[in-house]
Image (cartoon, rainbow, N blue to C red; front, side, top):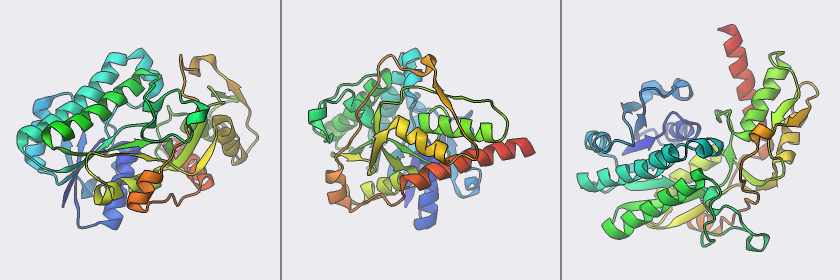
Length: 324
């Protein structure tokens, strides 16, 4: 089997490649990356991957890629995924996420191929959810609260349209917060962990800078997430959409306190107004019954391990930087 992973150098893409190599070694993995993409996350497995340079925003690039690879499964993970940046670069976010996804699906149609395609939408599409709507189901209305969320609504809907209009076998996920080792340090829990590691190493003075701590999030481990994505294309129904998320719900502030409790020295924090979004999503509590009933998936990694592994990952990166 030939599998194509877009965004293979990212946190999720690299962990998905790890999972496939470990549990499905017979699979041939192809990865799409941009020429300037950092390869740190896949350095340990790059020799086992078939890597292709290309750009989702270039239709001809996608057509050439699909003709070369002829994948049987596609995991479309590449995106501009940082919400605050979407406020300063809304058009670029929409172009990358909506037009990029459209180009990928159009290339599949033009090439006459019939892969199973995972389209990675986001829980951000639900936006400002009311308390009486919890837990959030797949039928909940969209109320996107950022350009990123709007782009994910577009990505979600274009995938549905290509299934309905052209029979392209898309399966959509709306993944809730997932984190772990290799998480980009622009995201809250990773930014906290990186600052804690830097303070421990004497590379930064406290307090650590934080944004809105009152938002409620449901956390999952990235390694559980990629296991879910593989099961999606094994057992999911083309044309359908599935919420995926963990079992631990807490405020961002509670998550911060959990990380601080793992620090090797006392850590203080202070809110930085520059880290507050113009509008924020405050309630992220999913119903994942539909996906679990279809696939039998359950999260296996406790949040404490996820956060400890995230913090240890940043400690290791700082130590490597110092040694280099």
